[in-house]
Length: 187
Image (cartoon, rainbow, N blue to C red; front, side, top):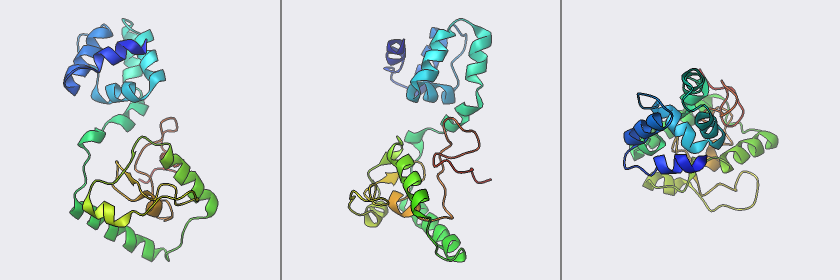
């Protein structure tokens, strides 16, 4: 069934993919963009959509699933300027300083790092400021992603995971209200 999705996603533009997916599912309109992003990244969700093809009531439940909101922003469109990154770093340092410059315990550090290592948003830095902050990755807890940044927030992974006042910006895929680190999303 995923072969059908592969054919649909071979389209030239994202809106065209949504239109083609809507037609494939028997709808008279494109699927919402967040649902299309989720279908691309989540095989089980894509299978569920395809299984419910031509069944309007079931499709509406799937297309209006609250978990789709975590796919509402296009990752490709999410870029961070060096100025944005510098401002974010200053704010994080100030907040961390107010909290006494403490660091998370080893268990939290490992859990956060494991979540980042398994995340599709983990990337090599592309901005000059990011390249200055990262270091060489080594096989040691807290340093395994030292040469990577997060595509969602632009932060250096090995720095961010250590700071208790920081949080992952990505919503957990199966636990509403939690981030990908398994921690409550900040309000």
